[in-house]
Image (tube, rainbow, N blue to C red; front, side, top):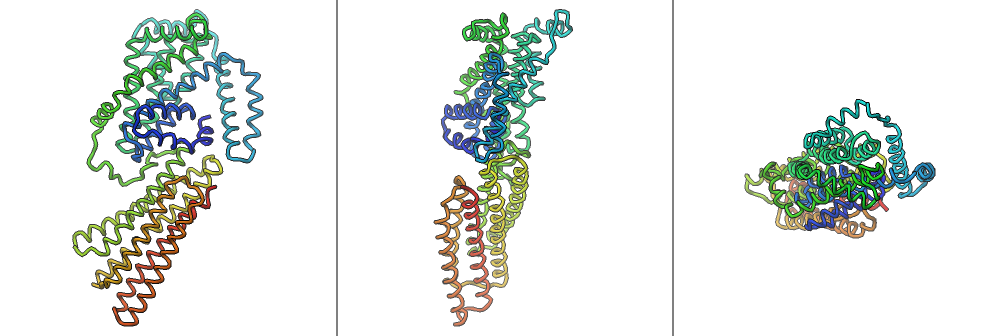
Length: 539
């Protein structure tokens, strides 16, 4: 269900997140909404680790989204409690399955994800039915009953024990929603009591934080702070709920009575509703209590994991730093952001060239040269890593639009790497020119300055297109820039040929000038290739 919902609406996820600005309440609502839609707080927290790893959000914004995600993940419990326990789905599930199968094979972007969603819905509730029916009957003399009795009358020790059991099961299953559904079945069938089930829900909320911490192992320090914040947030909430455990279980039982007319301890049909109330209430109150302390909380995390002076200078990818794919459409968004970052890196390299050409101070000149070589190494690294990531993405199931975007990005990174190579060819030409003490006239320097400006304008337009929605109709300005560059290149080459024939400067000077002009134009050719890849591989 989660995968299909992401394919169906994954392209909208970033727009929802982007709308949060700096408002903590919008951030909480965005986390709640997206988690409620894709039915996975783990997916949202992994995505947040990737986004904060890239600097897309501040730590405070990410903490707000994470708090909202904790509330959003309770939606699954309500779905299960209402549909899984209070309705006879046997007469509905098979027809739904029959509806889903044709959708899997019909053409169209939205039909296959819709079929997969229905199929996932059917499997979810069939699995719930199987769990309910497969659990063995228990008798008064069962060793299970004796064991549970021994651990159900120990007060705080009992609560801690069952919270630990819930946390352990969630660590294994890696889904708090699935674990809560299992907890509901165990309590509904009389295997554990209502208080024990509520204690397990507390532990499950802590166990679900492990996913974000796994994603953050290979991420940067801001992402590690978010993962730690997720854990501390849930642990802090668990502590105060355990302190007032009796009050909250009693309150959730009364809420279940108001909804169903029964108390959970009296009627098993009220148990799922009671646990859903407990789960939602726990996360909602915890969020309300800590909303006003997001900034101090962020400061605490920065104190635990201190900010380093070179923290923002990682020689690495930004958006797909984590060592594994997250979830289809989210992975696609991460890849797009990484390609955009690659484009900006190439633009940074090109903007070093004019300064490198005109610099006469030896120390500054060598410093610029080192920056260019380091930039080339990083460009090669980025191209290789993004290509590997996209190749792995191809192995997963995507919409037609998603597949086109992957194809487009593979072409784009090839051209971006070639642009970095052109920058290094210009560096080589300038270095040789300087080694031979060959100097350009003022006319030549002015001509190159204007050419550099034209290419930079084209580069900035390309970056703006990469930062868009990979939409068509973007070639008009790109084509206009390409024509200007070609026309001015021809003008410079004609002028250079005339000056050479008139003996204004030597053949060596003319050849170096021609090489730089041609390399600039070749770089511009790759820019138009990138724009065409964006335009022709999307609708």
